[in-house]
View 1: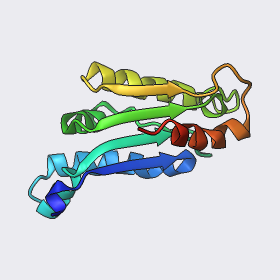
View 2: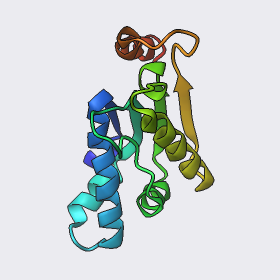
View 3: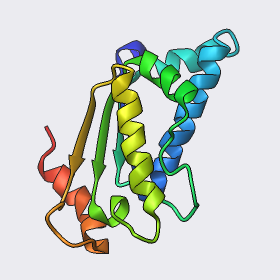
View 4: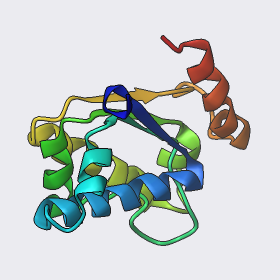
Length: 143
């Protein structure tokens, strides 16, 4: 029974760009609900979204901060998890990542979304190994 399915979407590092694209799609289908009923039914199956240390080489939009896009997402009441490490959010060469991540969380919280944010290895120096170790850390703490 597909209606009983719970989808949990996870993106890691550059893969968070896929989750960000979902946010744009949610907004499109919220604005055009009759465009494709199957897509809207699929969206209803998504119970949680997990951003795991999102980052990419672009100079912006690592984290979505557009209010209209996030408002459409907030209305879906999807459980939202943000797990980050200093590797991304404290990168002095890409300071917008930390700023955007903070804005993403604040905007969603102001819209009533309960964002579960975790900073992993916050007491350690920024390293690529901590970036990948977030996967192990989450796996060890999975419910």
